Length: 403
Image (cartoon, rainbow, N blue to C red; front, side, top):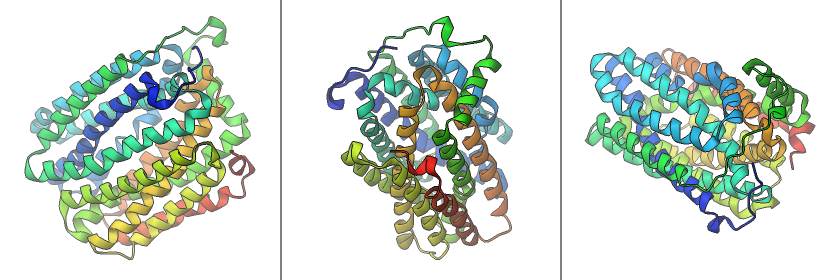
């Protein structure tokens, strides 16, 4: 792939198309993320079943993550993004019909949709360095994060209203339309695909190519340390994810609308954090931002255990968003600047497999534990589990030196 042309992001047509496509698509995602668990919760009235449908968004990384990395490195990244968007549009459009037949069918569609996302998310991160120069990556990641958080603020609040006042079916129809819009925007990008030479793959076959990605991740001291940090934090973050839904419905007692508002508060915080990261640009010390962000995430989760009113709950949820932005943008930028282009998809694939696999299992554990342990007590436990690796990261040279 030819190096990205060094022009201001505001004048970079390809980046702007990727940005607007993600913005619209993710609004639809927020609708589905409220509609899916609410649909299952209403049908089963089971915390574990609801946790299962939430976990299905992360579990496919365990099954397909490494394979996705190999595919991304071998194929035209733009075609991968477009194809995945169109397939996901068809799947989410089918949810209302499938739900009339069986809840098991909803689980299947959720799993298939998430499985396609396994190919999309690493591909989006892998294509970005081909669209913008290295020195603009932290700002570009920040602007993508800004778009994502704007959709959380708008999308989750809108989702809570639509699910409550209209129907879950409407949410899925809108989600399908946003995937089509995203596919169109990506298709219009100015992106010249250059087929990798045969020498780029030392030995043929998925297994051998995947091993290259694994070897690079394991033997690079900074990437290995960073990955261990994120895996440890993912245990607590994954378990806390379904707790927010139960916190909204059972502790505060507001149902889908309250869940949407709390997720919007996280989005508002993420927006503030991502804008701050964009303003700081290259001045950001990525090692400090990673460790401080994860530590504050833990503290924010733990504080929810002492709050039982919606008004006060907005504060820690907002703080979660700010901290998440600082940590995630720094982590993504560090990976993009460190991993060679020819290995980018495979290393991302392995990384997503490890982190999302742990995350998915933790989501299941959190959903199951909420059935017999107080939700607020679980938030405190999750907060401690997240904060410990953040503090430990300060003493890990590979993380601390990620400038």
